[in-house]
Length: 159
Image 1 (cartoon, helix red, strand yellow):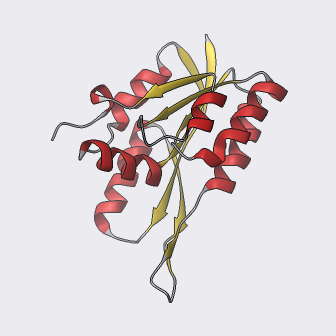
Image 2 (cartoon, one colour):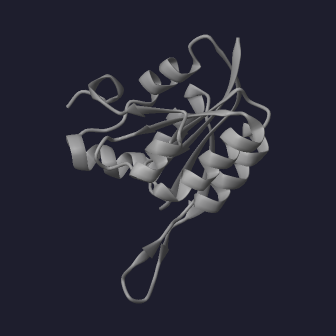
């Protein structure tokens, strides 16, 4: 049985799924797919904490599925822009847990992760499966991944 680490960039998956399909990502279906026949080393969902009740309920659902939920505070800048980026945290955890896993599943379309995928494959011989919305996932990340799995109808909640 293969071992797997699962890392989800919640904001990226939320916004790309909404943009492409006007629907939400189905974390239960995703979990079933990526854990089938595999032993989970670690599963982390990275999210932004805005402090509202609906968001807390969603985070509890993620925990019930099997994810550890890591939160970063939502920061609204004076100029109106917002900050809430987990790239460094995801990268650190990917290196820590990915080297002890046969497969690292990364749910994100962010092209900044292409160097991370390359390092995991080359240095640690870890397969990297990237789940992202086709057309909204960086080509560099798709090319670097061992496998790219497009988020489609099977990984979305019904309307």
